[in-house]
Image (cartoon, rainbow, N blue to C red; front, side, top):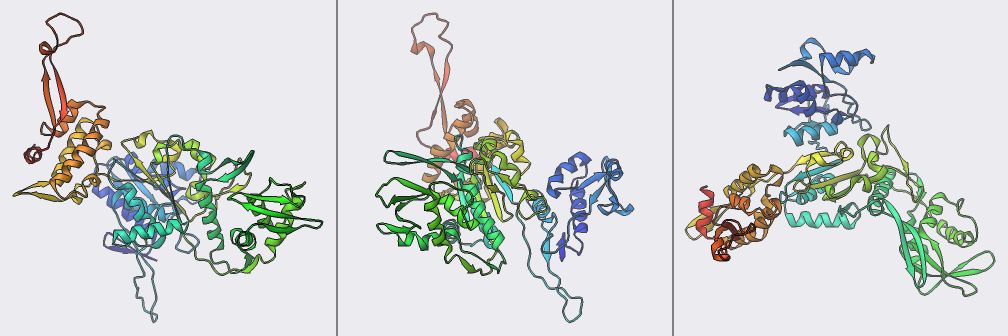
Length: 557
């Protein structure tokens, strides 16, 4: 493998990492050791600190055999910084298919945070000459990532592009085509979308007990949540990839062929002594009628699926087993098939407004399982026993979690610590450059300058997390549309931000948009002395119309 960074080519990955750290230090002359460790955190590598000073390296060396094989510590490899000398980690795995080391999160970390790009090429020997041919640039994505920023900065919009890039490796230039492809992948089950809110919980996300009401009967069953469903699908694909051995057909396929497609009015199932009729089926339950005519009996599809996957009923004994067994035998008749190689696919779970939910309550014990090192297929893979179903559960390597977070609701600093250290964060701030100038008669309104000034004032009066995104102005093509955005979107947002403190809202927008009138106390009340009657006060209101001169004056400050 060959790498290109900062217009130089490298054949050793550790040399690329060293070059990245050196470049960052050269661009930040006064950066301290602790600041540098924060910029290159251990979590990006997963096992080792990326940078160590001499003191920390000496401590590390006391407990480790051959520390010089883990860090670049030759005399010329130490890097001077303002308050110390540092060395750089040299352990980044190799380039075989099964061992990609920790370069994927490192590549993404430096691209997302420093805008550094590392290009990667295959090296192909042609006619025994030392020639290389560019294969393709490889772009890696974090398994767990959150896009965060103020409202209107395109966070949800960009999850579509990221999802398509992860699954297809490309994004159609035409937005309509991109959206259609995204919806097709959702329909195919490769993308799932959920929005967190304050009442959303573990039962909806992982699994819970649901009640089935049929006439006077109430039955309870365990239902998979969206996270477990998508994880199971992704895990099945992960296991079947490149698997050419014989195996069972999917339960859902066989169940449809043998039961659902044959069920019209009733489906007769023979038992060793008698028979019974399947009368109806829903997502979780099989309803049946005994030979005697007794109705209201049910079987669990989830239990039947478990029997099918095991190949026998070894766990459910008693009266109902006599009804499960003949259905199971029917399903197993033609269940074995020659399995074709299955292409490995990536699956995406998009969690919108991830910070609005109670993360500990929603993820529960599964928060550890989403870590890259704990994913199924890795050396430190973990599984847990789910509390309701009692089944083993793990998260596969081909399931990506993309979250969005509105910083106007809650800052990153206030987020659940367990969530913060398991996700990579990509900031999305307002980008006025995406806006344009609109013509009004013989004059113009520069939306770029308009948004810049609004956000500069908000940042001064409040903070940058509560600025206003460019998306609110993206579709504006004339003054009438701009007036509507200002009146119906910008001003209500400022009311929310400043808790109806109209004095601050007027400071942001000027008097061309927010009017201030003096309310004379003597005109309102009789000339009496009263402790509740104060001096004259200001009354604020939104201007009945926004003139062109108001916009021009605003941009002139």
